[in-house]
Length: 219
Image (cartoon, rainbow, N blue to C red; front, side, top):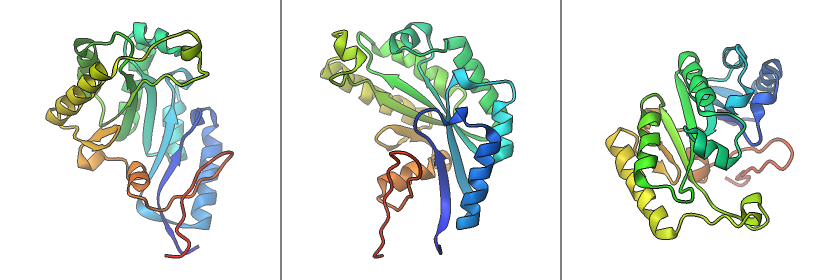
């Protein structure tokens, strides 16, 4: 009860499907249970295909001050391969709308796709740094039992994946997005407080079905 909440993160699945008024109710409940810091970071994950004309502005009004967009790719070829239900035009439009609505924002991208080369990935990175404050990048892995595994799709070989990762770190650092955690890139001002809580081993409370938390009850 005497703890101060410094970040709230609506993630997992597609929380942008929750009505903004219900997001507001959840935030009211949180503020009733704990003190919120004056600069509390309140993030929500969204997908381009859940974007409606007023969704982002409604979410901001509900209390969200940082929005993370699950784009995954910025070209139709890769989006189709990944099985996404939005296209590149929708993705870019959603990004533009986020920039107009939020001062703090992020994008998720997946790389190391089969046959992906540095030049193709460079084009995506150039596009991402032209408008985003924070970038989360995840290397594609093929897990047993997944659709990709059943189709016999092979991940990019390790040597090529390493080259892409090293290139990504160098390119983004030069562009002003240093890597501050395994998969996350941003200047210090826009580093995600919630990401840092995970990686620094600090306390966080998981709420919801299958949610995971970490609380030090003896400290």
